Image 1: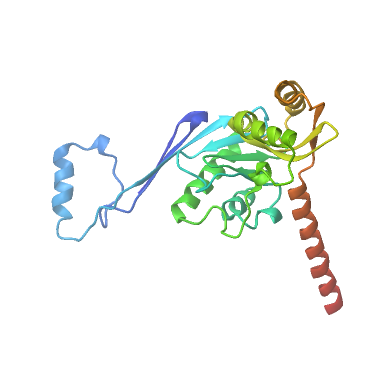
Image 2: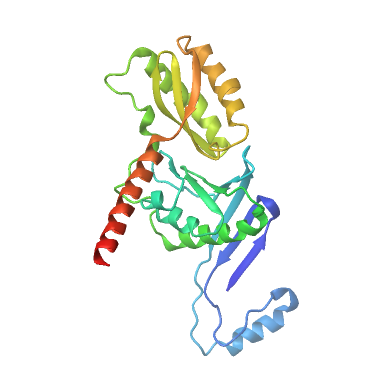
Length: 270
């Protein structure tokens, strides 16, 4: 028996289970009185049947400042550790079975995975969310029911950028602590994240991830929000700039090199 109940734009409620009765169609008990239900039980008493527990999942969606990104909150813990993962292509998602499944949906261009939510970004075209959301809901529910790992064991945590290193000076340490304690939680509420890249000559360079990447209001948030807070707590900060994510660029470069090698072998074989 599969029962799906829509809850509007806020989410979807789905229940999965096995057939309770052999050789009987699914019935809606709203149209049956108790005597009819009892007779149904009596007729099926001679045949073995087992009631198995249902697995319930309520997936809530939340809008983000980026109109092309939605935040999906499944109500369960997505990652078993603290960290975030940002994938901007199916090639970069090899360490995440969940991200690979989501990228197979036509129109999905970015997947961001955090401890308790997943942000999905679609391409900027006429494809509406009401056409994409059912496929994303089904993908998430099927994946979590399969008990597959969200992230493979050999994957590194992308948000380890704020770990204090031995060569960090006092100002860099303050910047990293400020990102972790005050800025990052607020950004993650909007379905995205920021990654510390560097601090040189008074300039803090950050990489925008998830729904923050490509968001029309990201520049305003960066200057009026993050930069002002940085300068208030760390006077050494002169400005804050957004840069391309080095991790994503490295993954893209590795894939392009591998693709060139494979194409070269094919040409030699021909």
